[in-house]
Image (cartoon, rainbow, N blue to C red; front, side, top):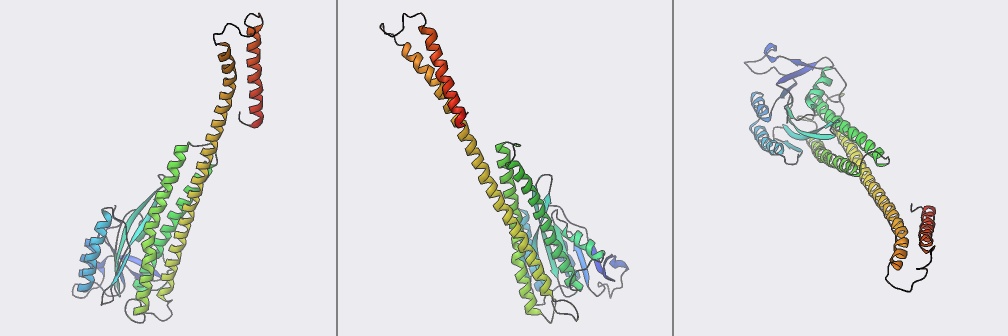
Length: 348
């Protein structure tokens, strides 16, 4: 998996956020400047080091250490899982899978997004090809509207961008399913090619749904954390600001909608597979009918030749001059009648 970004620091600026160099920012005895800040690092180890520098609690650091073990297992090929944990100090540690789509190869790629969120600090890292943090940072720096404020606005931007990326993956898979559907009902493509395409898309859809499932699971946990600490701490309400639970529910609803669309694509592929197998069965029946018709036409002259091939002395027309041409004419006439009958019935 590729790393997302080197260390970047963002702070609120006007209606949006901007990248800053903390060496030029005011500080107090070497400590980072106060106020909301978003730090993007390259790995979970860097995330822990940044958390120590930002004054995270011991319990929060233990949650990060536990999370590092989870992400290491996921990078070794285990199923990606979403997890939300909260320390007694109110710090939120969460991990979620990310998805991206390679249109040329029709492959779904997965990654891992990890965040430590305190009252005024968000520290995040990402591995994979989705570039969720980079996209979220670009949108925040462009001043695009996102709900909430402070670090909660960063969390909203990251989660909404993550789900938006999943929606793009679903749209790409939907286009691939539509192209496959056209192949099923056309003469292009061999049977093996169609089956490989259908099963390949079903595999990629299953991978996308496995990655999207933890997002859907984690959203209710974040909503529960919001309800428990609302009024104080990280998810406290601010005067005039929308409730955090509103955009969390929006993220959950969008992820549910993407999952339903992926499920519909999977059902459509099942239907296409059934149609394709039915078409193969019909073609096989047509081939069998053709073979049976030709076998019947061959059987008539074979039967007549077999009768006259028996070595008996007294047989009709053996001494007749026109006997041989007559037998050939009877064979040809019988085959012609059978051919005409099979053509009328659609067997040939």
